[in-house]
Length: 534
Image (cartoon, rainbow, N blue to C red):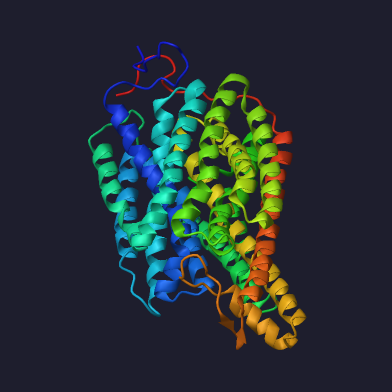
């Protein structure tokens, strides 16, 4: 008989008793590390920039290099999990992640800071990218298909809840030294490694297939150059030769990747998966919802510290409303999915998310957390209702033997869209903020050329004074407290544009949800009947 146990009330996902609970605990810690890291670094970013002398473009690349490295290695991690077994790949990825985290904490001050941190963040992201699909493959193997919605929702929900608690913790660690934001990963990572290493999994099988390194290189090159093109356009303009070269190279590399994957006998990503309409729409929904979700963490943190004058700890509490609501939404979405299918959860979630981001954007000018928190929570609950159900439905569209590959596709889609969203919204924020500040300074009698130069300096300035991060002087122009308040409003307006774009992205996810067939996956769990493999 199968050794999955049934809970008495039938209300929660059944999990194999004994040692696999230890495995799931280790996976929970590992995934929480990967999720929390991107968030707490956003909280620590202003302090890091001031301490190390980083430019605003440099700090964005420190955030984005991690995101891109994860996106570039998710698909490869999924394939490696299928080839070598997910448990082994998870342990290797987790070890790389922890080692790179420690090195991030030793970043030197001065000109070497940016390349040091970017290199370490790339290694950290690669470790996280490899371990994520391996972890998902292990979890999928522990639950039958009709219980995966609640199981993965529980895992996502608790991971996000831990992330939420990690935000104020990250702020507190930053108040000691931003370096502890990275060093805290060492004890947690060691505990996760120990828990995973002492267990076995029924889904730790190997496949005799090639690793498709050529596909991995093309995918990494295409995603990296596509995002780099947007970053360069924001700095140098669209007519710059380097920008134009990147604009051509990125899509070309991605097109070559698709061409290669469609013809290689052992693809990194089986393009035929996208022939399934539901799977393709799941990926589209994840793409648009993550364009809003991941950049939100970065922009909301900076808004709290620049516009609301919050400390790093207070900025973490500000984001707590979103993360707690996300966890609640994820739990509800998993239950809805298991009972009536995925489409209702997707429609409700994307609708609530779009409304929440739009209302949040309107209230940003209020500069009051009391006025904003209901809409922050509405956006968080909406995204929580969308992301785990869409990911779970995608996993169910392929057999268990391809769970590693599907995990790579799901996470590659999410992380690439997050990096793309951060680049696009970052460029939009800079353009709007500079235009608003330039107009304000010209209205105060500053010559247009000098105003434009001062606006550029102002928008790219980050100061480490607690409670007031605006400069007193830019481009030879003294900024009185009254002028600072006007310019603070200009920065807030730029944030409003960005959050409206997030609402638009979530609305596009809603449109995709309308087209979703809503049918349940037909693939069955290998152990839903009969004995479990040994």
